[in-house]
Length: 99
Image (cartoon, rainbow, N blue to C red; front, side, top):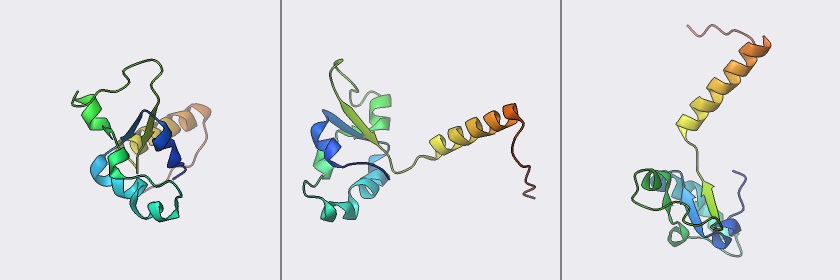
C-alpha cells in the first residue's frame, strides 16, 4: 500500500473503504513504524456510511478528504473489465483457456 499515514492527520476527514477490514490493513502494525501514529479515533467513517447517508461526505469546497482502502473486490473487477475492453479494442492480449 502506498500511503503516508500522516496524511490522515492533516486531512479534514479520513475515510476507509470498509472500517471492519481496512482498519487492520491501514493501521495495524504500521503504527510501530510511525513517529506520528494514527489510530481508529482518526477515522471519520467508511464509504458505506457516506453512501447510505449515515455520515456526510464533503461539506465544503475546501474540505480535504483522504480515502484509503485495503482492497475492494468491486474495484478489482471494474479494473479488470476496463483492461479487458482496452486490450480487445487494440487487438492485443492472449486468450487463456481456464476449463
